[in-house]
Image (tube, rainbow, N blue to C red; front, side, top):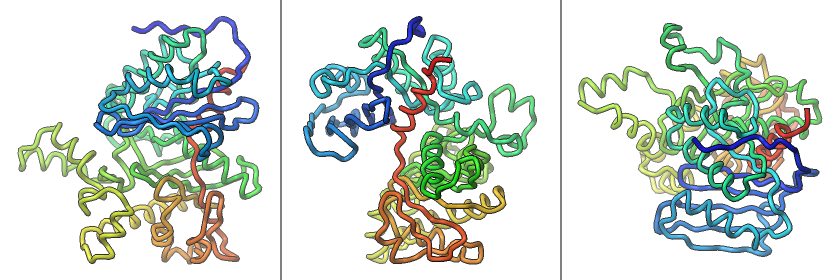
Length: 410
């Protein structure tokens, strides 16, 4: 076990380093704690391939000054993290990290909020790794490498699942025997929590309403996709379940599926559990229907008359629409529907299709506004009872905010 202890003396936090480690990328950002202004940020992309590379931009998100791009062919997560800490004194000399926040995908039942990293937190992250085997180990690796470079710097784990711990029992329980569910931790946990939390706070500010008085449907639509019903700033339901496989159609994940499909494939097709897991997580979704998992490519193929691409587009949007309807029922109405994520932020045609036919429920899209919407833009028609917002999610900023909160003096 890696020994990480909570610091006995709290130091003033001068800068917050955020590490958001995914299966094939690591996003990095530095923030000023007083304002949460972004000092700089970067990303390692295509980790483990010949195209592995690190890019860094000083200043706010999207800024071009002091751009640095470094090829790191075949570098794994550990090598990328070591390169980051080697490079930080040069690329951000004015902002040595005095607190480090880490995204952790799965916290199980153990965390309803971000937590300072110590041995007990590390052990829990390792235990729940069986539920997120692609992500939790690399999230934990970031803590290990950071602790060796900055042994006296406090670290915080910010869990994707924490925001959804407020789901009521009826939303988080599967209808299976409790003895089995309790013994194996089988329940709905939900994911993308930092994104949904950020979107809810930002939407309330745009609406000019206290967060505690809002009812919101937040849609994180990208290669991974999820929906959440948020009442008063608290998650009351979300589309992902025990793992990120449940719910919306995604780039390569099937989303909602009759569980009997699994046993049928085992029995009739002779497929192993590992083969089925690979099929449903890595070969399905948009990829399974269209042969590609990029919505931009799907639009191109649709234009060429590709039947699979047309079906993929329709299935994707139809599933989102079903969840919008379900969460309208869960919330008893909504103040706003928020579109976010790579698809939600940038694809006007998907937004239009997801909302089409919902006018009787108070959801009215203005086509011109929809086509030109930017971050924070409203795309609903005049007089629409429900606001439709496009918001660029900033998970790193939310992780920085939660890091500060976890380290605040009691």
